[in-house]
Image 1 (cartoon, helix red, strand yellow):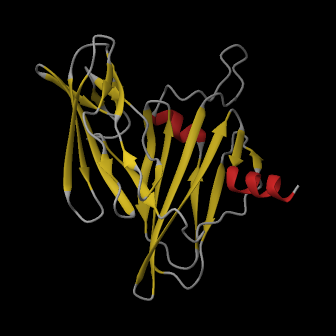
Image 2 (cartoon, helix red, strand yellow):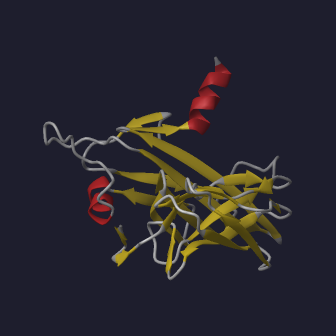
Length: 240
């Protein structure tokens, strides 16, 4: 398989860019392709900078589970580099150059900081959509981390330090499909434009209020051509 311009002879498919809560434990697992017995390593850099290494070995079916759990004892961004080794061949999570991704941790009773004015459900056409994100004006040093994934692959990730209390993520499916050909944007029977995959949009905010660090996250899900804002869906359900 070719990903981001380089060949992968073995690679690791797994969930990335999740939000967990402080007090939980982080575990790792996934599938190695092709289905072989291979060594897998996850190098986890905690928000404090401490490095924790988790190892695993896949079965002959390609299934791998990490041999230890990591207690989440601090909020923030946990940077992870997942790699797989089989003899002289090595690979990582498809979608970026070195297999690096992140999970994040927030306090269980955190203040809700990230908001979006998107409706509970939003239809997306072939022109795509700019996803608006906003936060309170009294937050300083704001940095927004974003990750866009489909099952087994990272489509986009990065971070920005926007000025003001808002920012927009530009989601243009055709551009992503040009970089990741397995993202379906066309009906193969008719040739017409059509979204068919499930995509996850994960946003993580870190900032300061006075001398206190603040964290929050927002998760949106795209299924076919409908984008779901679960925070608003749950709020609507609770008001009924």
